[in-house]
Length: 278
Image (cartoon, rainbow, N blue to C red; front, top):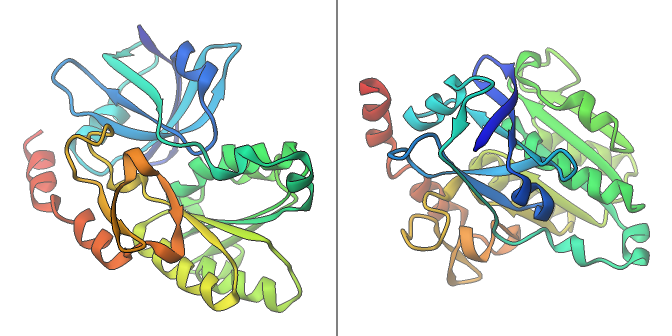
């Protein structure tokens, strides 16, 4: 039984849960995801693994209430169980294969937009624990929508806050803050951008201008999570790839973001109807 052990609303629409799934917890690596179903007839929902505790046998998932299926997840309470939790799926982050020397020489900057802070957390912690320099830019529309700030401060060298309305931290978007940091002398060997698709597109354009390699996560495209439905097809370096099987992380320079944005919106009408009728 995949029982919910803890539940916390990080914002009115964003929920963090720890779920008992010992086999997943024992094998999970940064960058991987899992799939949950609320019941036997429920939709398969891919969610990034935000944390894992092999000793307790639990994994942490963060869900934003957007459509009918995510609303059902958010409505679940401690003691209730998911019908299925399958994982870990997808490929781990490229840096898990670094040598000790590569970790020590690395300087990563993460750009976390909105709920993207949740999957950034295990990556930042993994790198920092192995000697890499890690800085994280956490952005949101306003201060009330920021998540994982304290958690990130405990596992990073520096955490930078930015809000669109200026209610906390830097007044502006994460890419503008990244440019400011680099202009002031910050040196990074690699960037990782995780968040809304449009944010990752502009983060990639910014990094390209700065000559900074960037990795992006296309988890938001996934539906089935096994490569069978084809919903997460994306063009990478001129070739068709599947976010669930070939990713979810890719070289941002090579992703056709315009195509990905079109694909991301292809079921919006159906999702709105399902939420209305749920």
